[in-house]
Image (tube, rainbow over all chains, first blue to last red; front, side, top):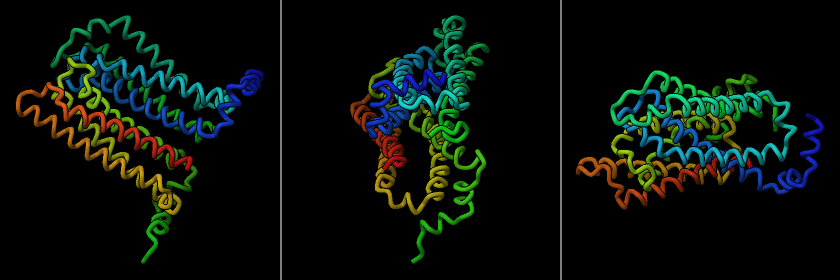
Length: 162
Length: 159
């Protein structure tokens, strides 16, 4: 792992990221805007799956999901900039690994949803209740994204990065 | 004339936020400020993007419960924001970007209230599902102002 960190930090991309002092704050700004899209749009869909806001048709709520995916891609890219810039801050950081675990959970949960109850919930209109499994998927999704946010914010305090 | 930032910084809650080694002090307050931001601006984004023409099958009146989430997010962030400001008041009171952030938040909230009025008027006249032109312009303005508030907030850590 140390060899990997040393190699990554010697690359031109990594050195460029740390060299220009505006890159980091700029990526932080984008990372927070992306976070808002994920929490807001995916959270909205999760809450509907959980049975809140029943006047919202499930399929219509889902139509906004490309925006959540766009927010996630922004954060994947800016997150990669942070990692490539200073990998030593993350690889030994327990908060970072917890964040990655929450991300993995969110991803597996979404895949589970798509391959199981996903199709059945798509025909649900305004006023319809969601199956219990969909409620559980929604709750787990919301919890894992909040976990991503929690551990991300705790990187400097629990994991001692920065 | 008492020095308000100095007094604020000496209050018990400011000292605790700043100096307690507990993870429940500064780190948790800062984390909650980020969660509140996600809820407040995220709920706004759902309505703004809908008004801009995304997800046209989504009935606008059905989004009304999102205003409760916005209030909750705002309450969390007003509280945690006051604590974060108090914990470092003498420095933050001298940061121009802090006043830019406050101004942008006030402007965002005004636009949010105007959007809500536009939506409710649309519902009253029976065409709640129409993305009215003023609604569109307000929605674009709302997204820009909230993104600006986030930008100014982030820059407080760097400027």
